[in-house]
Structure formats: C-alpha cells, structure tokens
Image (cartoon, rainbow, N blue to C red; front, side):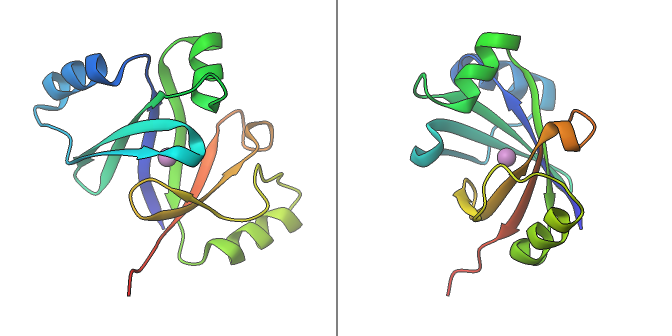
Length: 134
Ligand code: CO
C-alpha cells in the first residue's frame, strides 16, 4: 500500500535521537521497547511515512548483530499491507523466503513479517499490518 517506515539501526538511541532531531527538525512522537525483538525504538513522523530508529537491548538482537557487522545505518524498509497473512501466503508461493512463519508483534501497533534480503534484491523488507484495537 505504501512505505510505512524506514528502519535505521543505531548504536545509541540517545545519540541518534539528538542527531535526527536536528536533521528532521522535530522530536520523535514515540519511544517504544519491543522485548521480543530485544530493541528499543523511536519514531519520527515524516509526512506520510515514518523513520524508525532501533537500538539493540541485548547481544542476541538482530540489530546488535547488524550494528556489529556493518555499524549503524539503513536496516530495513517496511511496507504496509491490508492483510499480512494473505500477503505472506502470496509471497511464499512466489518463492520468497519469510524470516518468520507467523506474523509477530512489532512496535507501533503492528503485526510484522520480515522477508529474506537475498530474495528481495539485497534489501531487508518488512511487511506490516496495523492492529485495530477494539
Ligand atoms: Co520496522
């Protein structure tokens, strides 16, 4: 549907917030920890889309491994979909590998699924669907 957000891996959220607040001329609209992913995040609204900064909170986090290998930088691009399960099913049939078989809970009221970067032109792609709270 649209680019929902762009994920940037950082070493220190505090330092990155300082930098990006200057670059974007605005403060993050939220900070959120996602324990299952061992990350803490901050979100900036940039018009229609958002920027998500991610700092690892444990060595086991995918973000920790990424930052260790490559340093801070662009980590993933997230596309919003209407029905994440349907889209996962569709892409799987097309031979795209999913990094999780079931949608998992992400930050910012989302169900998410990552696609294998090797099947997406070297880009880590996240699918996300907004959770409608009753
Ligand atoms: Co994300």
